[in-house]
Image (spheres, rainbow, N blue to C red):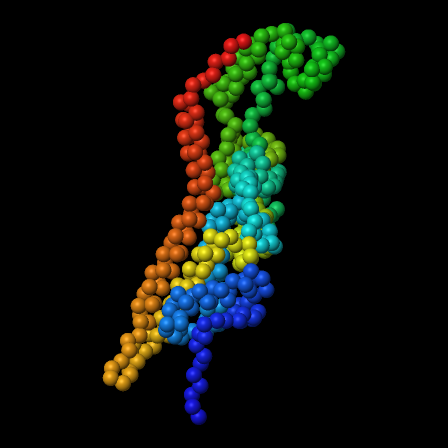
Length: 383
């Protein structure tokens, strides 16, 4: 039985949905119209009808589909680089191809939340409060045993604030000019200082007198007495001075697990990194003329490469009186160069139109315009 020789390029093609390997664009009417024209153009650019083209129409169709995919991927790469920071934490439920993305401050706000957590001025991590029973003459307290192991089931904690300090100096402020009886108490209550002393001196005496007297009390405590302070090393709390009575001490803390970077919006169904930002294949009919011209040229380079692979199978075809050398290696070398050149040019163009470069260019244009306007004479208005 004779071996069946596969059909080669006859000079024309007829496309039907399903003729491409992946079928990504088969239902697009613009794609259906262009694919046969591109196949015909590539065949003629490769030498048909002067020479046979050892390809079938499906070969050209596959190269055309691959070229659109490559163009889509390169454009998407640039868009992902431009928009990843803005889109992190957003839903992955919609295709972002062909859509304008407006930069926002969402991620910057999320970063600010982490600073707010550490500084105690905001954030999304709850501060918790725990009471520590201080005992007479005992200075050191194990916060792991008193808080972490008991209240948080052994979870690691970080102490944020310890409410341990001397009583305010104003509570020990003595003013001989303060009156007594109901008049004085009414004065205190009237100014909202019912639990403080004194009140009348705030009105009758200069402010600096209060400051000097309060400062004298604080310096007295600091120099002549043991200052209220503490040490906190490895969650071992040591307080000074040595307690001379039993009382409750309060501390604020956070559970370290609550500060995990994978909490909050970093989960399934949201953009986390380069791999799942939803830029999908483009719609062929929405690609402009410049993009389609790149696709056509890349299709031709792929077709040339494929033809070179086929012709490289035989370096020479023997014929009576000699042989015919095949140009497979030459075609493959030229195709590789053309592909690299097209990719490099596309990446250069995309980088030139990145958000950063466009903003820099706009800034330069604004400076040039300002310089040009600065050389114009200023009008003089006469009333």
